[in-house]
Image 1 (tube, rainbow, N blue to C red):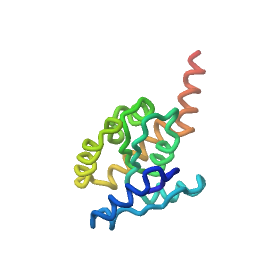
Image 2: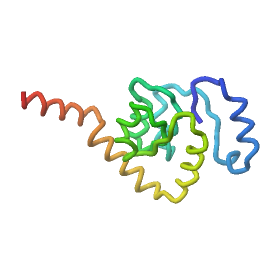
Image 3: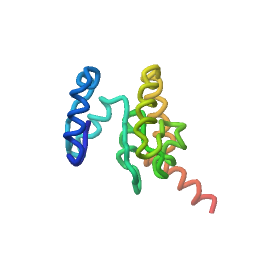
Image 4: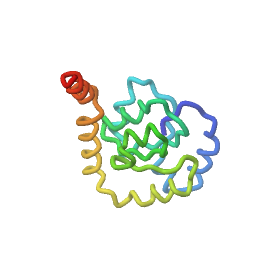
Length: 142
């Protein structure tokens, strides 16, 4: 887990220590320099965010560029980026039970195939190049 503040750190540590599965699977990393994020995203299968609001969703976009599968809150910016969950998984903000069920169901997901699908979608629709090309088409039509 990469995180920016430690507000819930003690609760998270206690939760991780209560489960052998979590203890083996969760590593608490903390704050990471922005330039190092691509290495972390490329090594991860999922990008999970419980954010209640985002103006843009840059971290989600960066993760998708590296093939991370989004598991994020159903807030407007994340719904737009994932095309309402077509390219990722959405859960209601604050709904821990739905998130837990969603994560449990992901164990059957063909991860490599899904990572490639997410990365391809990012390149074709969300990358700087694809946005510039779309904007260029609009400008040419005008």
